[in-house]
Length: 209
Image (cartoon, rainbow, N blue to C red; front, side, top):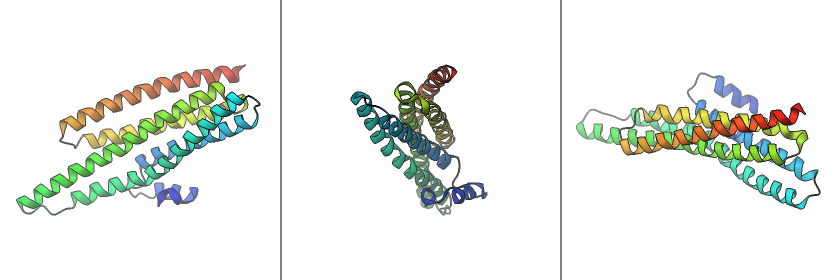
């Protein structure tokens, strides 16, 4: 669906005024772009080294980043589908007590999915940040700025996804679920922001000479 569109068509869809693809899908796209940059830097580094240890490390990063990119891309559409499911649940009939009960159950289940999906995106964004960190430290220095950009957009994937988590939590009545997800979100965000600062400090030191 959206993940398969050419870039210009995707941008037009985002700009269209329709609710999807929205911030959640765009956050997943940021994650996919970060993973793609990690793949690029890993390939460049592997292609310019004679060190078997470095080459092996880059192969591992390439494998991980490739898998992450695929799942991020899938979540571009998963996020939009989750939003559609929430809207569908809200439109269920609510004339009788039974209908009201069924509608409320469907809404709550859909909201949980709509919170869980961006939480997964944020978790993956943190993993993408770790890849960027390794590449800034150990990758080819001519590509250090590409790794740094990967870190920046991985951070955007994390923070953007967590905004979507939190707005859905506002309407979820299950306190146990709500508290668990809120705690996980806070931990992920704290780790991501700290990691981004470290990465950018290191990247700046490399390009400053």
